[in-house]
Length: 124
Image 1 (tube, one colour):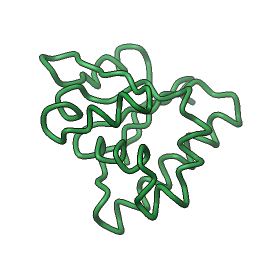
Image 2 (cartoon, helix red, strand yellow):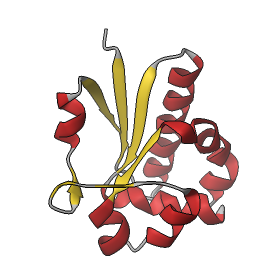
Image 3 (spheres, helix red, strand yellow):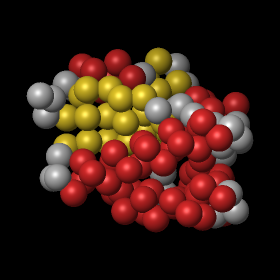
Image 4 (cartoon, one colour):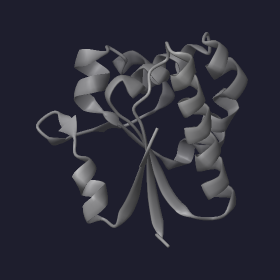
């Protein structure tokens, strides 16, 4: 059994399958929190577009399931700097939500950092 888990959200806001991945990612995060487990959540790639939906709560999934994000917000490690600020222009939403920007290799976040710290990586 892993002592630490990192949930990486790569899914977008546009496709129904991605909606399910968002719901499952944050349901898993809530379960880990309720169990007292050590975990982190990271928004990566197109997954950073959820920051806009969570900030404005104008997306049907964010309206219905945003409470799961709210319940685990204290475990959100952050979002990839490059993807958030340059590629998908979600910097304002990240700032409004208080989500830190993460880097590692250049301007992108390094998931290898989490592996080095002993986290099991789960992607949605």
